[in-house]
Image 1: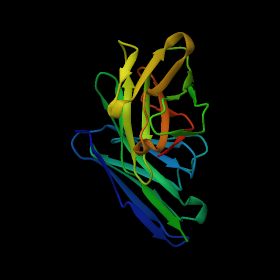
Image 2 (image 1 turned 90 degrees about the vertical axis):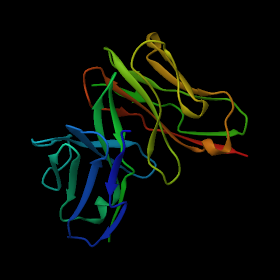
Image 3 (image 1 turned 180 degrees about the vertical axis):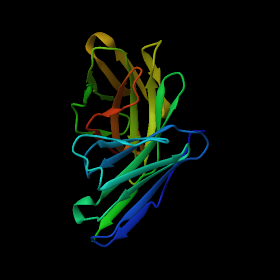
Image 4 (image 1 turned 135 degrees about the horizontal axis):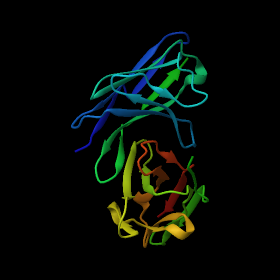
Length: 116
Length: 113
């Protein structure tokens, strides 16, 4: 159990276009999902916390107008990179949270975005 | 806010050698601790976790970690590594009652056959 999927796994887009990445919790409901960015040879940096039915909470330095997050249902959160630029090229990873014995996040496989 | 430090950035071992990766966190309250592994080209997978109870936690693939509260440490160990353990390892912490996870910078492990 606790499987999280992401789609697409890889995407190449032209500078100035927008790209949408989906994150789904396949076998559990997640009121909270998280979006991370991972640069080469670096750790995961939290971009924002996505809350079902309400606005996302962005980390300091993350442009909310550039990285639009929607969490319309308990199993789906989307990240839209608007007006993408080459510097947005990165590995984007989502996770879905679930409360068990402790609070745990389950990670998706990631999406490799390349902006040309 | 909590922080996590992993002192070893790149570790190279021969097969059958023992492994210990350091992880220290800074937070004054109760924490939940995790070790994740990311194999080349794959996504993050949970190796083991500590919420409460026995401070020696056993995970998958023969890994274990020990929570030493007095040292704010959660070091990862494996008595005998294999080539297939070549991967990047991330220590992570959440403050109890909070959802936000803070990751360490990661340790790249290279196991030489």
